[in-house]
Every structure is written in C-alpha cells, then in structure tokens.
Image (cartoon, rainbow, N blue to C red; front, side, top):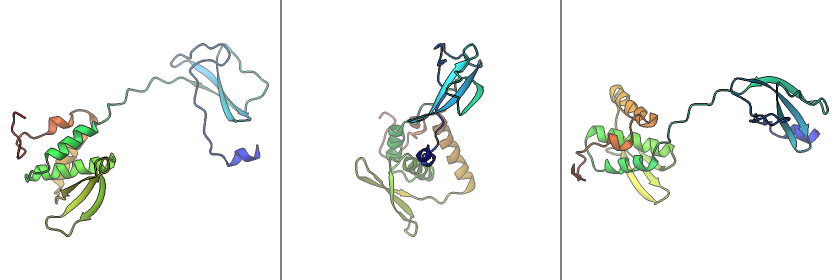
Length: 184
C-alpha cells in the first residue's frame, strides 16, 4: 500500500452495467458505486439497486449516483485541409480584409499545429510573421496587419463562425482573389 501513495490518483470510470447481474444502467436511475483497493490499484464496481454490493472485502468508499444523460454530440472537427487551402488562396491578395483574415487563419493553423512559427519580423516594412508547414517544409510569409478594434471584432466573428461549424472554410473564400476566376 505504501508505494501506491506516490502514484497519480485516477478515479476509475463508471461502468455501463451492474457488476452482479449485468443489467445495463438506465439514464437517471440510481445505482451504488464502490471503490476497492486491489493489488493492481483502485477498482470500481457499480451495483444496481436490486443487487447489494458484497460486504467482503469492504469497499474503501461507496456512494449513490446515476447514469447521466448522454452528452450532446461534439461538433465535427474543423477541416484542417480546407482552412489550409483557404490560407494559401489568400496568399497573393493585397486587399486589407484578405491580409487580415489570412493572418487570423495563420494563427488558427498554428494553434492546430499545421504551421510552426519560425520568426516574427515586426520591425520589417510591412511587418510579417514567417511560418513553416512541418509536413511539407513549405514556408509562408504572413503580413501582420495593424488591426483596429472593429476589424478585430469582424475577424473574430468570422473565425467563430468557422470554428462553430456554422460555416465551412470554403464558404468564406472570396471569389475575387487575384489570379483566380469565378469558374475555377
């Protein structure tokens, strides 16, 4: 027991069914959870209200609980490839809103570990950040725009829509990106 004190404490998860009769736990129906100490660590056994927990060995602890409502399904993961393609499509645009949005996409791709920040040249004219895509070793210079509060709010709203799944990255692409036609 002494060496178990130095281990990290991990509460074993609830089981889906009674340890005695095997009947699955229904959502909202109470059951008893018992925590036991075994040779290999801590073990949890759950028992329905019809099956009392065994008294030998005695549990370290016991409590009443219930199976919660299933969590809402997580939103689909953001399509990294679609964000990366949009980031690349905006590369040659000089329009201020494209420069701003591309910078925001670079930050998003950096957070997603698709890009790695190599250096920030904030004293250059214009200031830029240089990113590298580890998968391809391709480097990209991203102009760092000077964002006013209203511009930052607009970009944040666009990013929020992208992250929430209310829109996909392709829906945010602007058709008049230099070098592209609407028929592409």
